[in-house]
Length: 477
Image (tube, rainbow, N blue to C red; front, side, top):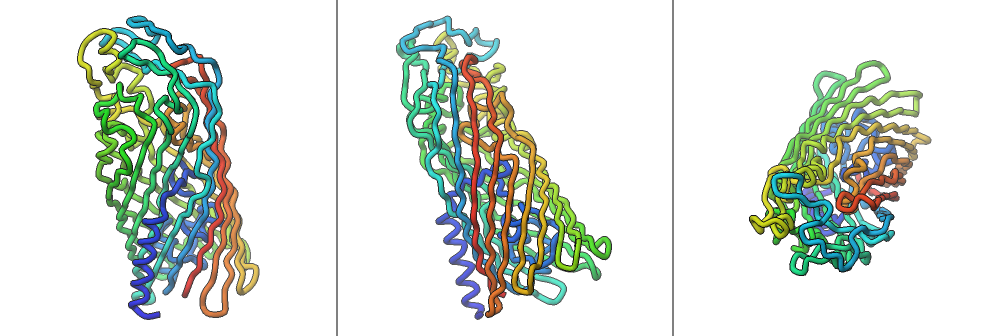
């Protein structure tokens, strides 16, 4: 293949990735369970694996790229999530209720914040949008028999929800009444759309006979849109930059480093670390996310082993840590709002004072409320078996901790990232013309998470999700 064609393929892959990556990859939080189709077949395990790897292996461990050889890989996954929320319990604040100065959850300024007094209608609603294409591309070139340079283009993660219908009972400060309005939060169709794309130039080299190191520069692009959140305007420092502002985009950068070493005749050890990816703010949503619209990607680390258990079989074990709590927009829960760190406009209407919300716990504030996700530790196991000279088969299973607690269910209607397990399988078939194709399958199962509506504690909100994915990659060596 000529140099011109390789550049053309890379440019086309990046363009297609930008065009198609309206993803909803809420698998481990909002991170993908795997980036390579081969790793997808083993539930994402592969930080130490250097056997039959492709040019996207560096997304797991940059040190593995030197074992990929000269090749390019072009893939597409079809991702299908089912997201649902349910509200039980009759609203405590019915239409027409007019308790000016006596709304149950309100108190004077300086004490507990006046919580937004609205109830959700008893309802069960499933999100729209059930199928998402997720493209990926990798290219690797051996600079010598001991070093390589490559470029990877892949979706790091994302989240999408779109709830049509439903009702909420919300306070109208102009009339002093509670009114029933359409939409999950009483402001029409409700949801978010988050997409994150990484382009990662990667250098890898062998050190000694049995070890390698690698480094990737992470160049990130993300976009975000939110709808149906207008009734939170009373608890944000920027009510006009909260909801229904179309897509907001941001660029970012980070670094990923990796190490791989053979520690015995049949065992390899691998480790990688990705720094926090620093992005510019979502200016159109600086009233929603803490720190004025900041939504950085958290740091992660992964360690693992690859063990030859027979002449044709390899067992893989990875442990991955995702540090969501380091990002306030993700790690902060609802507590900054409900524990008096936000003096809101509704309080002002009831008791006098500033008409605008203020305080660090308000939406967009320096310690603004968020989704309340805990850090995640993911244990991934996989098995790869070379069935014949031209066929390799894979299976995998992963298990993770639940990032969402019962106290933070209401905002996670927007992002029901409750997946805890992945079951995967896949295979690679060698073709006669120095090429191959890889297929992977994934099922992700979650636990229903339930908790009280903090704005109407007599109600219980439940969120749930499961998901399916099938992926295809064509590779040329």
